[in-house]
Amino acid sequence: MDKLRGYVLPIAMVLGFLLHGWCGRVAFLAPYLIFIILLLNFVAVDLRKLRLTRLSVWIMAFQMIASVGAYFAIHALCHNELLAQGVFIGILCPVAASVVVVSCMLGANRETITEYTIFGNLLIVVIAPFYFSFIGLHQEMAFWTSFIIILKKISATIALPFFVALLLQLCWPSANRFLSRYKDITFYVWAFLLLITLGRTIDYVFLHGKGNEWNILWLGIASILVCTLNFGLGKWVGHQYGDTIAGGQLMGQKNTAFGIWMATTYLNPLASVFLAFYSVWQNLFNSWQIWRHERKLAENNSPATT
Image 1 (cartoon, helix red, strand yellow):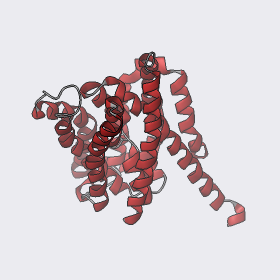
Image 2: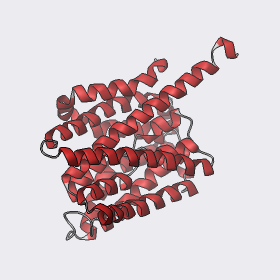
Image 3: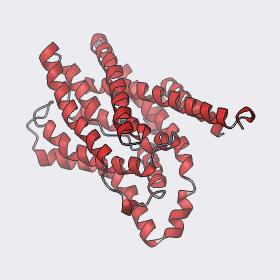
């Protein structure tokens, strides 16, 4: 079954496109799937030893500076508020909770990925309400009101599995070891989650695309450029700290479902189309990375190379 992993994501993406109407009816499963993915990842590392790394600091700094910098630059150069908001939310969007699945499959350090998943999402809780106080449709909203709204949205998926795993490691280590044996199934759980979330975003594009074709085209082009920048620059930064894969995935793999929620809540809702396209590009790239990785493993394990 592992030999088919390079084809799982493309299949999930095609099914998400074909079944986008059905995906909305099963979207309630998404938080439970994220909980399973994170719990099985968290039990596989010693959470008490996690520390903020320099790699994480650099990625956080890029998110904070580049997102708002790109917003004002686009606004000044082409006076396109919608495009500026789309690029802004595309860079600011936090790392996907499921980033560990692809990253560790490709050889990234699990502790580094887990640490940034926690700290990177907490960064958004603090910085996003500040940015939304002068960008978007609800600039009158108090910082603390926005802070609590975003905190509730993130903590429901990040904090709960973290504390459950920590409790198991402290009080029931045998159960923790048992669950850690099944961390590899998270890839297939994530593939099903991808089918649902991608189907929902595609459905959103269909619903809001009529009459906005040119705006959607520019958002789609910009999303390709930003996705390429995020993965490319992330890999370069990661290389400086000895983990190219971690750098690329942590900067490039976005929680597009949460980003779409932020866009529809605080910005022009059409800006969320940027992240709908971004979800397609990042998963196409991840599919290619997995296919190439599996192919190299097969070549290295073939009789001719042994």
